[in-house]
Length: 627
Figure 1: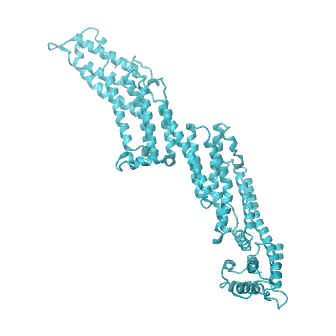
Figure 2: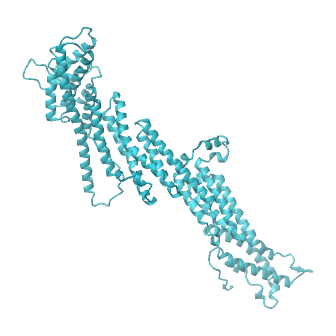
Figure 3: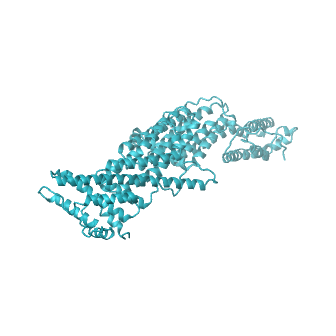
C-alpha cells in the first residue's frame, strides 16, 4: 500500500472534535488507498465514514426521534470490527496510512456511540446497532490500550539495550562518576514515528471515553522507565533513615550522590518526561491530563528527594556542613523550573525544603560568628605570627564567597530590608549586600578577638607586629579574592590599610623611639666642649639597645615578604641616617682614647646588615665581623 505524501496533514483532520469540512481531500485519498470489497455494492471505508459523519450531524440538527439506522451506516460496526481484527494481526506503527484510517474509523464509531447514548432513543433497531457499535468500540479500545503500552515498553527496552551496549563498548575505559551526565544524552529516546502513533492512540482513547485507562497505562509504563533510570544512578542506595546515624564523612558521600541525581532529574529526566507527555497528549483539551500525569510522575520521586533533604537539615549543625547545605539549597532551587508545569503544591514543597536548608545555612554561619566571639585562647602565638583563628576564618570566608549569590539570597530577611530602606542611597553601607553585611560582622568580631589576643604580648612592639601580621593576612586575602573585595566594599578596604599604617607607626615608636633619643645631640656638649663620658654612655646605651632589639626581633616573624621588606626599609631609613650622622660627628672623640672598640661597636654598614636579620624568625647571630 502506497503511503500518501501528505499523511501529516491527514492526521490533523482526524480529530473528531473538529469540523470535517476540510477533510474532503484526505477522505478521498483514504478511499483510493483503502482496499475495497469484492462486492461492488459495498461502500468504501471513506464513504462509510462520510455517511457516519452525515448521520451524526443529522442527529444534532433533527428534532424528530430516530427510528432506525440509515442503510449506509448500518454495516459500519462490522467494518470497524474487521479493521480491529486486521490491526490485531499487524499492529499499529507499521503503516501510517493504515493507522490513520483505523484511528479515523475508531473516532467515528466512538462519536456515534456517545451521541446516541446522550439521546437515549427508544428504538429496537437503534438499540441493536448501538450495542453492536459499543462492543466494537470496547474491542477497539482494548486493542489501542494494548498497542499503547506495547509502544511505550518497546521504546523503553530499546533504550535499555542501547545503554547496555554503550557500557559494554566502554568497559576498557576508567569508570567515571556514576552521576556524570553525557553531553548529548536524551531522555526518553522515542523515535518520532512512535511518538506520532502514541499521540494518535491517546487521542482516540480519550475521545472514546477511555481516558482513565489510557492514563493508567501511560503512568505505569513511565514509572517503570523512571525507576530504571534512577536505579542506574544509585537512587535506591539513599536511605533516609540512616542519615541521622552515619558519620558526617559518610553522609557527605550520600549528599554528593543526592545532588548528582537531583541535578540529573532537573536537567535530563524531568524535562524529558515533560516533553514526552506534551508530545503524546498535545491537544489543548488534554492540558489537565498532561499536568496530572507529569505531576504524578515527578511527585513520587521529588518527595523522596525532599525527605532526604529534610533529614540532613535535622543533623547536628557544624561549620564544615555549610557548603554541603548550600549545594543542596542550590540543587533544589534549580529543580523548581524543571517541575513548574506540575501542581503548585509540589513546587511549594520544594521551596519549603529549600527555605529550611537556607535557614540552616544562616544558623551555621551565625555559629561561626559565635565561635570567633567566644574564642578565649590565652596562649600567645609565638613570634607574633598570624593566629590560626585568622587563617581559619579568612579561608572559610573565601570559600563561602564562592556561594555569595546564594548566601546573599538566604540572608535576605525582612529586618535587614527595613534597615536598608532607612539608609540613604549615597551611604557606602547601603551598597553592601545582605551577605556582605554578615561578612563585615564576622570581620568585626575577628578584629575584636585579635585585639584581645594582642594583649597577651607584654612587649608593645610585638603586640603591634602581631596586629600587623594578622591585619596584613586579612587584607591580602581580601585583595586576592574579587568576591570578598566586592562584598566588603572599598571603604572597608581603605580602613584596613589605614589601620595597618597605624600599627606600623606604633611599632616604630615603641621600638626605635628610644634608640633615636640616644643619638640626640642635646647634653653631649658641656661648656661648649664634647663630654667624653656622656658620649661614651650614649654609644654604650645605643649598643645595648640595638643588641637587644636584634636579639629579640630576629626571632619575630613577619611572614608576608612585602611587609617584611617594607618594615626593614622603613627602619633603615629611620635609623641609619641618624646613626651615620651621629657616628661621623662623634667617632673621632672616642678614637682618641683607649678601648675605642668598646664604645663604637657598629659601623653604619653593620646597622643595615643587622636590620636585614629582623623578622626572619631565626635565632640571631651577632658573631658577624665588621668590614
